[in-house]
Image (cartoon, rainbow, N blue to C red; front, top):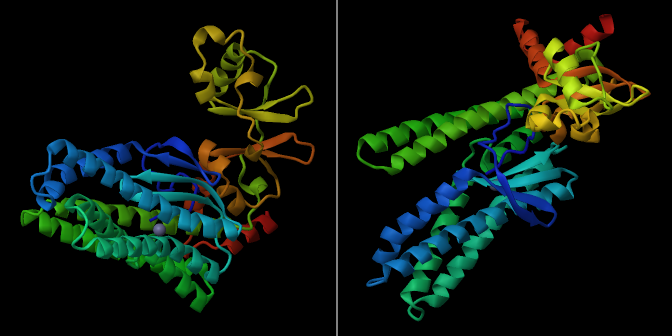
Length: 400
Ligand SMILES: [Zn+2]
C-alpha cells in the first residue's frame, strides 16, 4: 500500500518517522507505530501461533521465532514498496523515501505518472513482488513437506500466509490501495480524464472503507477482536481516499496557475547578517509572521528564517548566532513568479516547510506563498456554484 504524494498538508502521513537507513539510494524510515506492531506480532505469534504449531516448544524460542517472523514480514513489505519505487524511478518519478508504519509501507513519491500505462505498471509492481515472495515461500513449504523440522515449517507457512494476505488486501479495488490504482489507471485510459478517474476510484475506495468499518463493527459485537483491525483499516481507507481525491483536485485546479498569482506580497525580508536576537526583536515580535526570507547585502535570497529554527536555538546563543547560521538554505524553497503551482505542490521542500519564497529574475524576494494561501484560494474557488477548473483561475488572471 502506498500514497505517492508528498503534497500539501493533506497528504496521508501518520506521525513522524525516523530514518533507519538507505537502500538503493532511497531513504527508509519507520514510524513509531511500526515498533508497536512488531512487538504486537512478536507477542501474538510467540504466545499462540508457534506453541500451537510446534508442540513442546520452549517459550524463549517461541518468542524469538515470533520476533523473527515480524521482521521477515516487514522485509516482505519493504520489498513490495521497492517494487513500486524501482518502476516509478524508471518512469522519471522521484522516490523521496519509503516509510514502514502501522499498516505496511508508504512510498513518498514526487511527481505523477504521465500516462495510464505507466500508472498501471507502477501500481502492479508492488503486488508482483509480493506474489513472487508468496510463490517462493509456497515452493519452500512444499519442499519441506514431511522432512523438515516443525519449527522451520511453521515459520515458512506464516510468511506464506501473510504475503497472501498482503497481496489480497492490496489488490482490493479500493483507491489508494494498489488495486484502486489499477482501477484508476483503467478508467483514466478509457476516458483520458485523470481527475474524473481519480474521483471515481476514490469514491469506490471510500465505499470499501465504510464496508470494512461496518463489517469490523459487526465482527466486534459478535466477539471477534479482529473486527477492530478491519474497522481501523476501513477508517484509514476512508481518510486516504478522501485525501488523495483532494490532492488530485488541488493539483488540477492549480496546474497552469503561476506562483506570482497566489503569493502574499509585498514580503518583509530579514538581513542574514543580523543576530537572531535582533531578528526576534525587530521582525518576529512586531510583524508576527512565522517565517521571513533572509537576504544578503544586495537583497538577494539566501534562505528562509523560520520561527521553528529560532525557537530551536538556545536563548543564550541568540546574540552570538547570526540569522545566516540558522536559515533553511534548500534551493527548492525559492520559486519563480511564473512557476506553475501544480508543480510547486509536488516539491518535497514545499511539503516540508509549507511555504516558498517567490523570487524575480534577479533572485530578489517578491512574495511568500504558503500552503494557507493555496488552501484559501481553493476554498474561495469552491464558493462558485460549479466545480472550479484551472481555466477559471487562469481566466481571472488574464482579466485582472
Ligand atoms: Zn503496493
